[in-house]
Image (cartoon, rainbow, N blue to C red):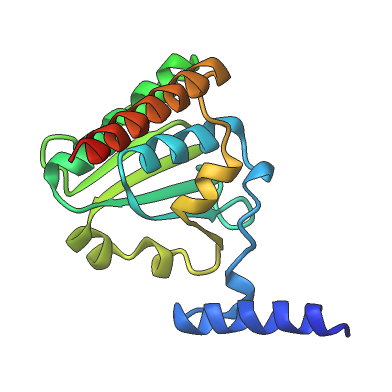
Length: 182
């Protein structure tokens, strides 16, 4: 076995051990393999600063859905904002949720899209219900915010990005001139 392959295997095993999981339960986060709707849901949650974004692949162990997308918010308002962001972004893409449950209490909001379900938890409820443990036979994909930025297609257009870049350069220029005036 090559040195790089051995290091890769060791790192995934070390990661699994740190998460308290079997090594085969942690899957490589290749977001390209997931449906565009799931990537949009992840992107929307990340935009609202969701924590611990995770996908559980239930295709081999459940018949009622294919995937769980799990996110955590730090308080009631953020949990609702994450939920709102997911619903709005998918609605703009022509996908309406079959149902949304738990919005008022905002401890655990469930957004059902049929073949995938988005779960948005507050921190306490996520620890209590622990879907990752409950569905431990599912393949798990931990999705970091950094990975989201590079892998999920951003709904902004390139011209919008260029405009933002231009504005940023102009702000930097203004700050430099203010500093030189001091």
